[in-house]
Picture: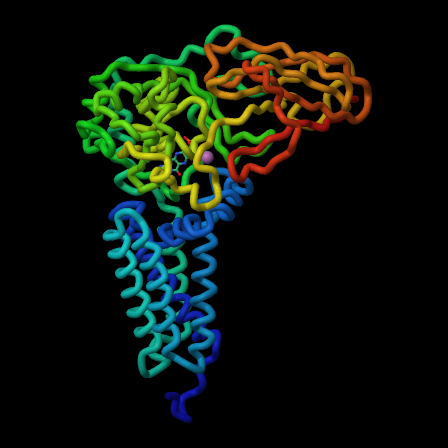
Length: 498
Ligand SMILES: Nc1nc2c(c(=O)[nH]1)N[C@H]1C(S)=C(S)[C@@H](COP(=O)(O)O)O[C@H]1N2
Ligand SMILES: [Mo]
């Protein structure tokens, strides 16, 4: 209640008070999260939940629009929404001074709900509580009687400090202590039997994109905001379900098994025609088939439900894990321990399947089961239960723009992992299909580079590409979106010759 003789407090002061209180709370919860562990961050939990609630939309929106920065963008959006909410609370508080307190509680309740949906909510709840307590304290202080106890200057100072603190906490390494510790053990790790990659001779034509994708350039797709940092010494994988003998293996147990190494091209079901959510690496690990045999798969089982340390799941047909292909628990990528972002210390790699049904990063659990029960993360969200890679080809040269008039060498890649490519053809301006030259490949599990030299006259042109696989199937021209099981259609590029 304001008495008559006290001058009315301008709305802008209420607004600053609320934003300052909110920002101070955010800064404290962010700093607390950074102290404990990056994944304990309530804002990150809310952003993660946003991805989980609308994956078909947001996750794909992010993949296409922001690339690997999408999570950062999402966190920024959450921060902006929060700041605007604080401001609104402040403006309403000019008439109803209790509103911000209620608002702080409501926002915290939403954050708590998001946190409780994450794998290990305990520490994030502590960070959240610290943030809420700070908001309430600062608010109480700024609005204490007499109302002008904190003068305008003081108010601006508090606001300034809170905003700077929030910015510092936000820009400070978002990865936290644990990630640094895991990064240190990763760099110390020696993996017996892992050899450096040697690109097979004749596989790389030196045009377009490199045949081997360096780990740093490898596309990254997952539902996490910050990659889980898994301590390799405490990592275990459990193989259970419809088996005779349950197995639990440590990294040392796994490394005691026979090593397998292979070139495998991994790609995402969300890769549009002409897209770059695909990469080719030299993977080292342990084949899954003998591990399953050791556990003794029971009759009737036809699937494995894989789970990661962050509770992401995917269902993989048993057949592709037990046939003669190199389906493996990979420990190394291009001769080095897996990067944290690509699944350190252990991930699954299965030639021939899209990542969303096979390539579990930070994998910790393989449950032998049946296909109807092995319902992975993306399946209820509208993606197919099975995801064999579709026959596809891509033009990488020219990427766009202008080429010189005369003979020009077009280049690109084609893939249908575990089936292999028999032929690639290109057509200029809707003309006849011309056979491209195929580079060599070490097998059927990688992409193959192609090139074709054609005379190009002055003017604007369109080049199209299509592939035929080793079963004699021609790549379909039907343009189809990535949902529910991968894009189809021919890639084409427009360019100018001058
Ligand atoms: N734990 C976990 N593993 C995951 C995912 C995920 O979201 N979480 N995404 C999958 C998808 S959709 C793809 S395409 C590949 C991508 O692997 P990469 O990021 O190493 O390229 O990882 C797969 N494994
Ligand atoms: Mo994917």
